[in-house]
Image 1 (cartoon, rainbow, N blue to C red):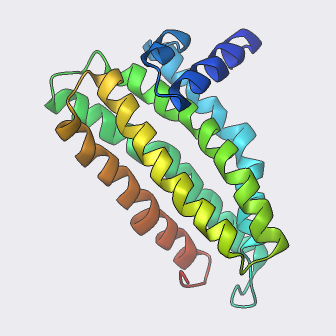
Image 2 (cartoon, rainbow, N blue to C red):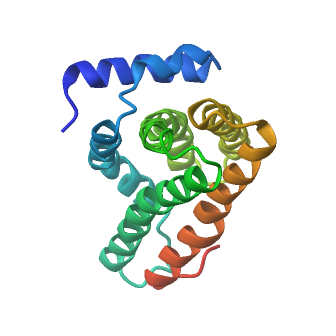
Length: 191
C-alpha cells in the first residue's frame, strides 16, 4: 500500500514532471518494491475510469454491467501490458536496473493523466458533441505523449530515438488494441 508521505512525494514529482523538470525522479521510489507499490494506484483511479466509461454508454450497449465489466478488464490490461514492455525494453537496451523505476513513474503518471481527463470527461458529460472537449482531448493526448517520452528518456537513461518507439507502442496498445478489445468484449463495436 502507498503511504501518505509517498503519495505527497509522488504528487510533487508529478508536478515537476508536468513542467519537464528533470528533478522529478527524486520524488519517486524507483526500487522494485516501489514499482510494485505503484500498482496500488490502479484502485483509486478505477472509479473515475468506470465513471468515464459509464458516460460513454449509449443505446448500442446491450448490457451496462457486461460493458463496464469488459472495460474493467481492459483497464487491468492497461496497467499490466506496458510495464511488461518496459521490462522487455530495459533488457534489450541493457537498462534492466532502471526498468522498475520506470514502471513506478509510469504508474504514477496515471494520476497526472486522470487530472487531464477529469475536466474533459465532465465537458463530454455536459455536451457529448462538444468541440471544446474533443480539442482538449487531443491536446491532453499530445501533452501526455511528450511527458511520457520525457520520463522514459530520463528513467531508462535512453535517447529520444529510443523513447519514441516505446511511446508509440504504448499509444497503439491503449488506443488500438486494449480499448477496441474491451469494447468488443462488452458487446459493442468501437465507434
